[in-house]
Image (tube, rainbow, N blue to C red; front, side):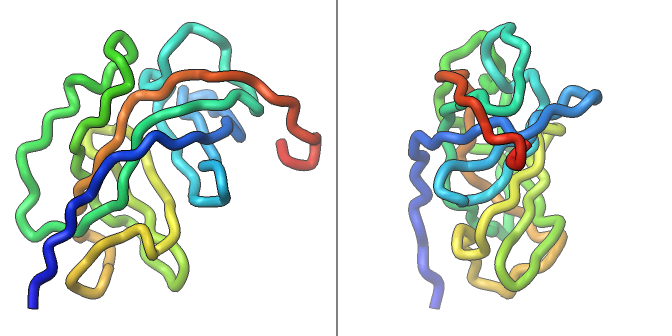
Length: 149
């Protein structure tokens, strides 16, 4: 029996945990829902990002697909609004509690709880996925305790 699911994007929040010399930014999703590493080019604005910057963006559940589409992420640039875009990716790591997806076109890496993956087959590295994702807006900054940086 095949069950069709509709994945819907929702506005989510996260906080910058770290920045890397190669331009990537590590973001913890609010509510301990996962970790996203994205290139700086996906974050709107010219502000120098530091741990504690709060971000908002669109994201959805991740769905395993047998036949990936010809995804177009050309709207995922900081000069556009943060509108959700259907993107593709590949599972690169699966364990008992989490999955990691490498997003197409070098748009990052997402690690979320395994329950966020909708799959009719046993999850394993190499499976194609699709989900909604967007650029990110900086919405504020909070001071993080030193032990969290």
